[in-house]
Length: 492
Image 1 (cartoon, rainbow, N blue to C red):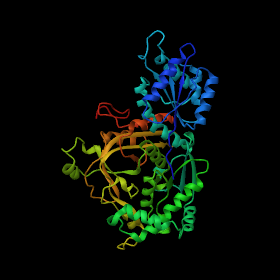
Image 2 (cartoon, rainbow, N blue to C red):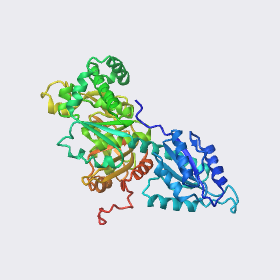
Image 3 (cartoon, rainbow, N blue to C red):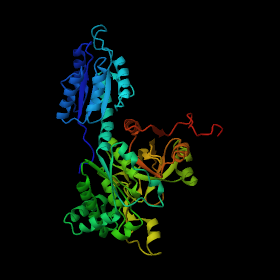
Image 4 (cartoon, rainbow, N blue to C red):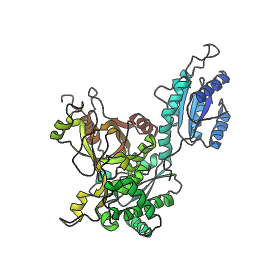
């Protein structure tokens, strides 16, 4: 199941009719030659609205789903911005720097034209991605195109996404409740189902002939040490096939699917296992399954998967690091203060490829205490993938709809420390510069829930641009020490 878009990029050059059209053509060709990747070069250089219609038709026939609109000279303000209206996909606007000809007949004034381009986009309420400095040589613009690809991939994915849920959001986790209005505003579809619908579908997959092959794949992934309950694999394989089939049968008019499922308290007893390991496997294949019917958690994960083109996870911003552990393992070995660190945890939904080698399928300790007889061996609470999450760079982020229906987001780059947690679940010690202030003046102050999405690498720049493109006005981040938050007491 291909659940991440493939970006098919095109480039259209535009030219103002009082400037030499050959200047735009020549500069467009230079970009295509400089770009080390696949890009369709539209042969139509746009000078007027009819050219614009022909150019959009041409790139559409070539199945382009993202565009570079290149101002090779000043550019025609109306036609160039209408490309963003007529084309069904994300559009980047860039402009040519001078220096490849004389400054009389070879001057293009695209530096000036980009100002009017941005003005016209705003006047028409059109979206367009404009890089931080959008004017450059062919080599410069080739680099901008590279940076645009993951942004375009995420925007295409979001606009073709369906979130499938099972079960109402849990009563004791109101933080996972959020208006679905925000989904429609950015083009996401949602299908809400009952847990009973899922249970009926699961039972229909009993004795599915594909189960044995999935069990073999699970056993190979876990290895001998990680496969502590081999007798559980058929149940979990049956569930994995249930979700994958549901995605195929219910995607409808959408190309991509993520899930947000209610995983407790009824699930383990009725299905006979915890769904966490299966969730981790789907996340590793770019099909996030968010815990506790966290629809915006699932959406956030998917955006990170599109940007990173890699596995992601969803974790609780869970507990502070004990001072004794900090003193022994972190202080003096890094520049992080105790308040820069915290433990991020979930029951066992992080993909195995992002965990330490000793990860294994275990049982959900909290649910075992709650649902199974005291002192008994775990039974249906088995099925979590547990162990420390591997050290490395991360980006912690979330897109959320608040109680008034407004979309907002946060992004913070940091790392997972190579320090054993000594705890249970899928867990790691995270370090984010100025996390203490960020925790108080963003996460608490702006009423974010306890779930955060994790991308494995530093992707803050791309996430910021995606959120801007989607129209998110409030994009918070972990501000450095010298930059106070609006709600931060200056006398502290």
